[in-house]
Length: 467
Image 1 (tube, rainbow, N blue to C red):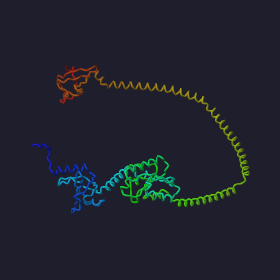
Image 2: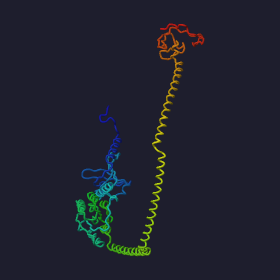
Image 3: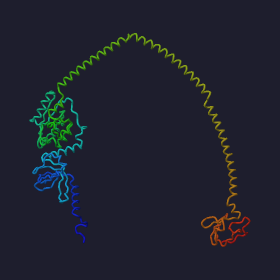
């Protein structure tokens, strides 16, 4: 009887394995939040518990090797975030969550979102060192985007006044914590870029928890920092705190105080360096002046009276003019002598006479060539006549004119022996003036019996009649 449900009957194990493969393929990685209940740890060291909320529950297992990555201690009633894959426990036919990572709900979700955004922005290249802009050596104007009431801004201002009092520090108030703070800071960065008077932008905030610093981990602020044409310094939190803004910014300072130290050089050190350079420059100029004075003095001793040198040059000029005139006259005489020689040679080799002589020789060669061509043609005609006579003598047509004929079979082959024909065969006889179609009535072999003609045998006076 045919199965009305399926043409192939599966066992329970096969169906369960199919469901397991489907679940593991469809849900390779999932992140689930819920409350731990029924937590138990058998001798194997694995953790088995139920993850539930007000609507449903799912069994979960955290194997012992993965427990070394735990950020919190699992306990019944704890709100957690689990990351893992969905599978089926075939022995009981129950689906379950195999957990790879477990953290408490608040910090866990934020940390997961932090890692995901960090990985995505790094893939886009927003953290690359090649795109980061250098800070000016001694900026004239710095803008702090911060909360004016915070202690961090006072730390930065105090350090900036100590290091370089002449630098203007502007404070642009903005919320640095809470919902909407990231968008407010991003709008402030865009406004400063549009205004274009600031040389360095500093994001300034004191330390706090991950939730307190979350405004600096949002994507809108990260992209505003990356799009800024003005260098951005991130001075957020304590030395151990890291935010997305730290990775995107052109410079990350561990603290606001350190930011002022990294951005501004110390005025006392600059003055000392300037004094040192001023002294070195003065000493170098004095040394250079002494060297040039000594060089001028040496040149003055070597230089003679200019009037004496001018008289010597005038005398040398007169001698040079005289020698040049003599050389020009001598060269002119040589040229005239060469021209006279060329004229004599040209008269001796008159082109008109040479052309007439060549024309006479050409006429003589033309007549001789015509005679030789006629003579050669007559010789070739005589030789051709001789060859034609020889060809005519050995021509098959001349033999046919003497009364002979060529016998050919119907397939066109020439009949060379009576053994190649049979009575009733049709033959074509080729004569000197045409062809005859004949039929063989009888065959008479020549004496000798092998069908080959005897040398003493002569054909009959009249050949046998043929059709």
